[in-house]
Amino acid sequence: MGFLLVFAVLLWALVTFLNGFHDASNAVATSVRTRALTPGLATIMVAGFAAAGTFLSTGLGIAFQDQFELTLASGKAGLVMAIAALASAAMWSLFTWWRGQPTSQTHGMYGGLIGAVVAAMTLGYMDNTGVWLTLLIAVLLPLAVTVIIAPMMSILVMIPIAWLMRYQTPNSADRIGRVSQATATAAVAFAHGLQDGQRLAVFLLVVTSTAGMGFDYGDMLGFEAITAVILAAGMFVGGWRITYTLSTRLVQLDPLRAGMAKVSSSLLVFFGSIAFHLPISSTQSVTASLLGAGLTQRHVTVNQRRVLDVASYWLMTPVATFLVAAILFLAASPLIG
Image: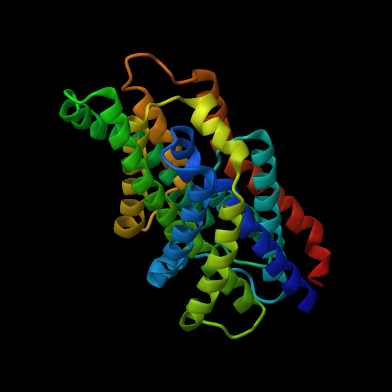
C-alpha cells in the first residue's frame, strides 16, 4: 500500500508540473509574439497568477468533486486506478507537447480516470458510478460549448472594439492591444489556476483519502499550497514548443485582436467555472478564441490544415487516455491482490 501511494503521489506531481508546463503557452503565446510582454516577465506573471487562482475557491474544487463523482475504489484498487489515470495523462501530455499540439490536460485527466473506472468495474472492483454521464458532462459538453461559444464571443467582442477604434492610428491600436494582452494574460493564468489547480488539488485529496490517511475537505489549504507550487513551477519553465504553434503556425493576429481574444477566452473560463461549474479547458478556450479573432481580419490568416490537426487531437485526447488507462489498470490489477 505504501509503495503504491508514494508512486501515485509522484505521478500526481509529474502530471501537475506537466499541466503548467504544457498550458503555459495558453497565456503567453500571443503576448510574447506581439511583444506585449517579454518572455521572462510573461512566464513570471502566469506562474504567479496561476498559483493565486489555485487558492481562490476551495468550494469550486469540491463542487467539481461532487458534481462528477471523482471517487476511487478503496484501498489498493483505488491507488492502482489513480496510477493508471495519472500515467495515461502524463504520457499523453508529453506526446502532445512533443507534437506541439495545444491539447486539454483537463480532458486527458478525465479520460484517464474514466478509463480506469471502467476497467475497475469490469473486474468487479467498483459498482456502476454513472461514468458515462461523467464523460458527457465533464468532457463532451465542455468541448462542444468551447468550440461553439469561444469563437463567437471573440468575434462579438471584436466587432464593437473595431468600430470604436476606427479613427485610431495603427500604432495607437497596437499599443492598446498590447495593454489589453498584458491584462488578459494575467486573467487567463488566473483562470487556469482556478480550473486546473483546484481539480488537481482535489484529486490529490482523493488519492490520499483512498489510502486511508484520513484527510478531508478541511485540509484543502495544504493540498492547494502543494498544487500551486508545482503548477507554478511548470508554468515558469514554460512550454515554448506549443507557444510557436498558437502564435505562428495556427493563426497570426495583430496585437488588438490577440488581446480581445484573450479577454473573451478568460471570460468564458471564469463564467463556465463560477456559474456552471463546468470544466472549461483554458487551452481550448484560448485556441478557439484566437481562431475567432482571426476570422475578423480582412486577410485570412487562419491555417485551416493546422486547425484540423488541433481539432483531431482534441477529439483523440479523451479516447487515447481512456484506452491507455484501462490497459494499464488491467495490466497492474495483479498488484491489488
